[in-house]
Image (cartoon, rainbow, N blue to C red; front, top):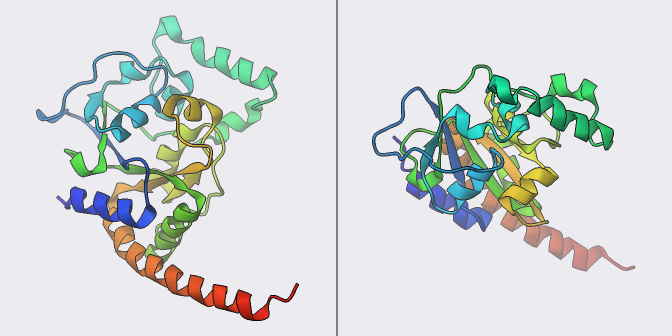
Length: 236
């Protein structure tokens, strides 16, 4: 198992992260060292906030029922007594002009229903993560995107719109993706107005970390170069 503490520290220092990266794992069984989630949250992305704050836990599909959109992107079937929750929220979104129903089939979804979803700060994950979530400013996500490109694991998808939770299945299927973070996610996770998400497949984490060192160094040198050119050539 990789040294996830060292990897988290590296990402933290280079990307100047305000929040800890979150490891998301899909497992058939819950490791004995991981506590099962107890309580209630309004959205699946609320678990991202808890993990970024330092909590490690496992959720069952039923823990995600409060979020019909998140349940949809995670291929979690709602129970019969809550089956109308998704059509209801989609109806609200379409009536507001926020979403068109023809967009729904194009939203990435997990290929199979999960048995357990584990969340933890990257440095404390008990399992190899399937996806790692980063929250950073645009200038720092640029470095991560460039590292993913250099590592050959960047997706060809554009900046993802709503819903933010589709970033997880999108990353699994296509490689690293970036997300602007929808209004629901911003409320439930309380990320800053100037912050965005990146979702990186766990299998590519070490390779991207390696390339990030090169990219960060290159950007420092290029910044000096461009500032010099600006001073020499700007006359307006």
